[in-house]
Image (cartoon, rainbow, N blue to C red; front, top):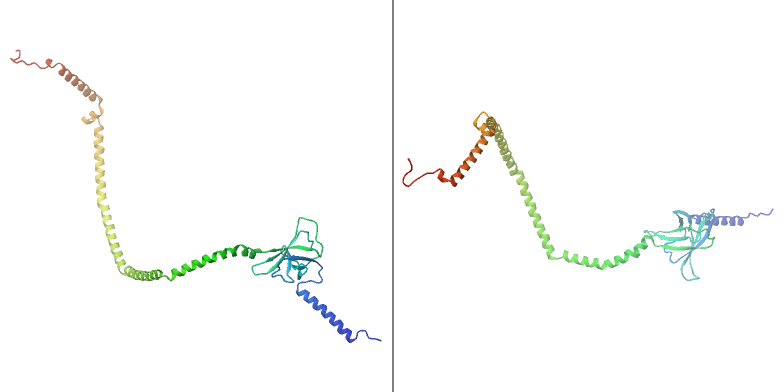
Length: 298
């Protein structure tokens, strides 16, 4: 019987199986799942710096595919064509964009932004719209770097001025004076510490003694002078009250003068009569005065 599985056939089968396993292993290391069906699309970019094969493609942060191949567009001599594989279940509406984004560390990611406003879908093999999202680094390069470039001459002038100030003789003299003042302050602090340790306790002791004497004197004055003064005031108040009671009583002359209106009316009438008498005396003096050069009548 003729043998079909000869040694050469077995070697060939082993080589083919090894090649298949090697290919599957390489694809697996690239992140490609050969058992998972995918659709292939193409994207055109002006610049793909940092983009590599097997770079994941995300939709809302979820991985839906990866980069399969990157080729320069030799036909147009401009741009780069990127081949990507996307999950076969993913439906890509027309007008969707694939943003190429770089972070601060230079890591490049592809973010698929699906167009939610149309119902028409891309077919496998179509070109998707590619767009470069500069992100934070792009904003820094666009806005911040020009400002920094403009500030560099001013910073250089400021540093030159600071260098001149640091090397100036006036600054050295000021530093020397500060050192001297610091030494004087240190000596004054030491003298003050000695004063606080030696003289101040004695002064405080004398002040305490004086305060004690003043307190003792105040206590004696309180006990002696204030009592006699209060007693004298009480006597004066009692005398005043007695005097006022007598003045208000109608039983005495002063009380009668103060309380009896008859005396007031009599005095008022007398004053009026006296006024009338004086007026009549001034108008008719002969009624009251009689004189003669040769003597009066007998």
